[in-house]
Image (cartoon, rainbow, N blue to C red; front, side, top):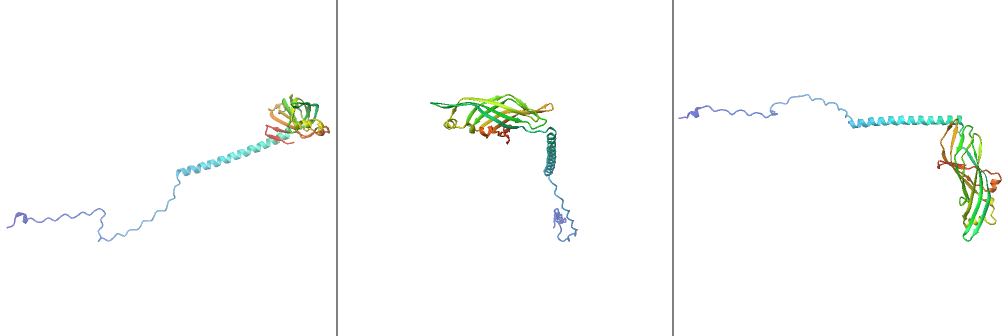
Length: 255
């Protein structure tokens, strides 16, 4: 005898669900056409690189403009200097040591050494070669030495003066020295058989100078004039050595 539960039909289990992406191995694969590869794209330049290229281009343009302006200014200055030279005939003055002499020279000896008393007179000739410019000289300081600067023969001041166009002026300087101590070498030279005409003096003039032309007057610049290198004997025979001078204490004008 069967129970009512045994007489009911048996139920089938539900089919299993396939996971996502599952492919039945019995199904043939689909034939698909391969997609063509896209053409390679050019790499874009970074923003900072593009900015650097722009800055370099601007710098080059600025440098070119600066060089052109500089060359134009140089050309304009050269043209202006040429016009000034042609119109105003500028020329630096020329200095000569005209004469030098002792009006007094006496060497005295004592127990503590030898001493020199001397009076000198020097004449410096200043020549203006320009036909349009007038040279103005302020008060000048004159220092006279000998024996390559080892023997002091005194100093003095000279009043201001001017040198007109195509003209010359003699500057006279008189110095006095008293009780100048001499070393043994100088004492032997200045005593006994010493010939004063063999002495080689040096005249140094420190002043300031400027020019004027057609109502215009420039400022003054410092000038140092040095005359020497010739003995008194040669000066008496008419030798007038040309002097060297220095502008601004560093621009030296040779003889």
